[in-house]
Length: 116
Image 1 (spheres, rainbow, N blue to C red):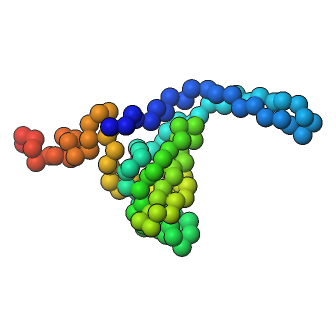
Image 2: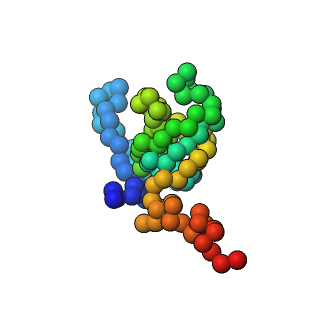
């Protein structure tokens, strides 16, 4: 099983050359993750992106950059990919393990096994 992505919000530094040729540095802090989706989960699009990514399509999350935790890279059934924001999707099906527990083994999902 692959290691889970860490969304720790550790500050990092960006350095670049400005128009005058001087090196500039910017300290950035990643934003908090505002959704529950993880790579391999199925999400439903709530906004159209293109003819290949229409409203209501169910796509697979392929990756999430820890520095941009609220932008998800998704893939449709034809293998095409795009980037979406967390507010443009609805989590349809949890597939990735959370805290070492697979979603199909989650007690909430197996309510029929619990005592009344």
